[in-house]
Length: 113
Length: 110
Image (cartoon, rainbow over all chains, first blue to last red; front, side, top):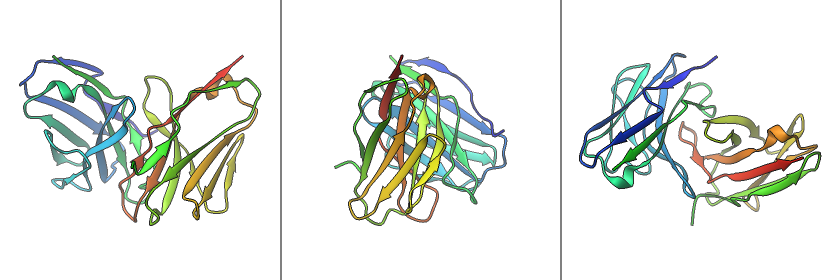
């Protein structure tokens, strides 16, 4: 079974703090993704990566950065958290051969006060 | 206009009944289509792919209408466990990015 894990299920941070969200997958997948999910807006792609040290902007990259130093790990960084970044953050991975099947982590619910 | 649009519902369905709902997409160049399922407070999971000729997976039937740019999902003999949000997903071009609709919530009641 594919397993995608995220470092925290719930996180509370203050405005202006630097926030790190970690994602690890154990299936040697090439592709990794970060989404945020908000009521009424669905899942929106923040950043994705096709390979180690590669990153590409998704639809809403502003206010975020990412890091992929190892194949199994993809980190999302909020340089200076703001209240409008309060959301559910979902990490996903897929293999290059079956890219339509994305496997998601359980999500991190982030509250920025 | 959103790239992938869905009726958010909820669709309240008696147990054992049939429910169907659609999803429209705006990019005529879209190549691949899928339905994902998301249970309350859980992560999305792939339910089924949608093929041009239509396809079934048990009680679930998916159809694609390229001319009108919509896909549909039909659930027969609804079970309580079918209660979930169903996400319409489109792959615009060859590659790894997927675009998700906002989801259609289905509530199956006894």
